[in-house]
Image (tube, rainbow, N blue to C red):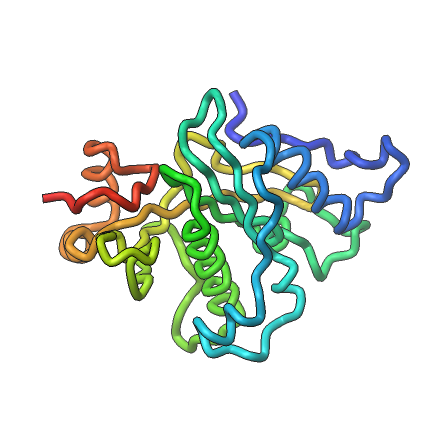
Length: 235
């Protein structure tokens, strides 16, 4: 059984269209994502210059980053969570279509996901910030820091949903669960990586032990892979 969603590299040509960046973008959002996650709920929420300015104090950004965004997918008959997924990180911006390599990485070779228990703009804003942060890391804007990878722990600087009662103030990057780990496009392969919200005390536990051990405890408690902003911390 395949562990990824396969797309014919000639997709788009059957409709008389050249498989360029725009067509690959359409395939990802309209074919792959909807096949995996169901219909989009409210369209796309792109990154903004304001986000880079206010959150990261970065005014000089690659204009292409502002075309990347977040898609919102409501629960389906096979998934009870709301799911937020980035789109555009896997764009092969610098590669001409005739040089696409379906067996290599498409663009950055990754898209991010975030499964949550309820619909909320807070989930969109969280994933936007994480995407923007990783773009900046990949561009070398924070010296001596590498791009995000699985098991990395990221403080959010406040409650994840903005409520003072919320104890979830951090996330851990995790391998995807309940969705395929990767998919393919005419421009190459793309992996998924997800995030799980954790409290300050859970973050301390992960630092003392490991992110893997914490995620195992959260999974056993029913707190992973779906983040519930109203839950209390593990004892």
